[in-house]
Length: 160
Ligand code: CUA
Image (cartoon, rainbow, N blue to C red; front, side, top):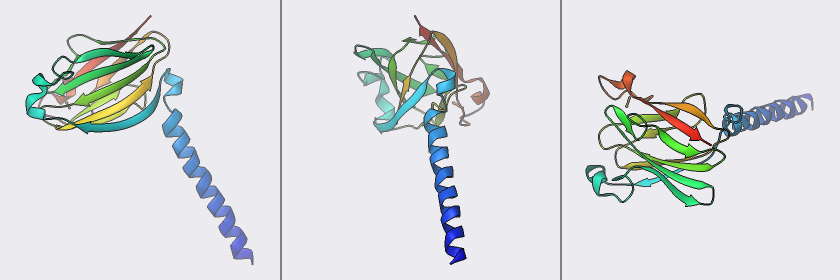
């Protein structure tokens, strides 16, 4: 049964490719000094973010010895925090970003890494990232969100 053997080879090749893709997605950011390790979310009322215990006061909150939660509001046309002042996180920490929007869909991308999510009104996008050495990362909105979309950017400072 020659055909059967070829099928096996192709199947093995396809499986290898799939494993390769997953590995690329999982570890693509390691070279940049960070790794995305989790991606989940929740719900929030976009009309009353100001009353939210975290989104009302967005920023970095310590949650464990070396763990932090960063709450970010993406709005037309800035990240809060991130744009007028950088998001600051300690080096060698595990950071979970919680990102939402009060207006339209935005993007939240840590430039040069695979840490990337959409900020959707009513939804909390949650991504967890492991930071390495002190450095800086750019932040970009990669979803078209209006006239100043191209100018919607920010900064993350990984501090010693
Ligand atoms: Cu916000 Cu594009």
